[in-house]
Image 1 (cartoon, rainbow, N blue to C red):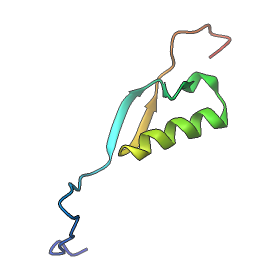
Image 2: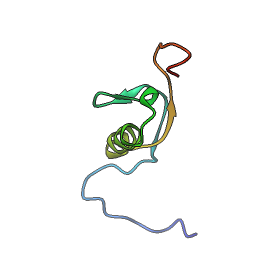
Image 3: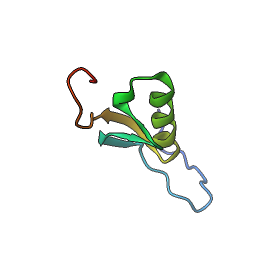
Length: 66
């Protein structure tokens, strides 16, 4: 892989993706909801803002709900 390649990013910044190590959810969804809709919505919002890795965290709830 060559390291002498220049990329024109039009005055913007180019950085590695963010790693968020404590995420409960987003847009009214929680990981504890356990639905595909919740997981996809949370992941899509975080990806839109540059997060490439998420570590889900559960909110306080009963063991049965977890």
